[in-house]
Image (cartoon, rainbow, N blue to C red; front, side, top):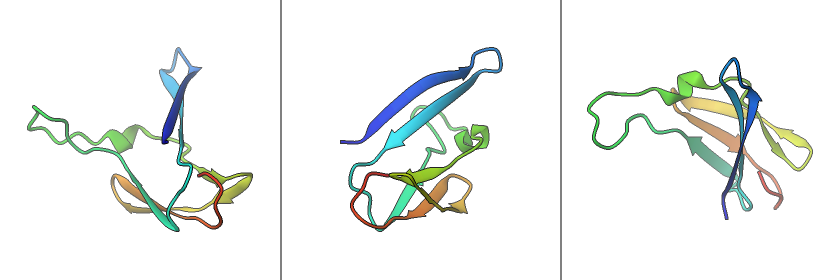
Length: 82
């Protein structure tokens, strides 16, 4: 099951820490954010609000490669969660 955990990092600066856990990631796991929302004709670039994006499998850091403005790819090894 995919899990999200959201916590306040800095309330006055409106910063939140969001953790996504994938229990069985693919060897080349793609992660993306939406570009638009239903009912709106405007393109929303939600990814522009991200900062300090990182990934880990267990304690091992996993490199994230940005594919386009809203998609990243992680190269995973083993069976541990991402």
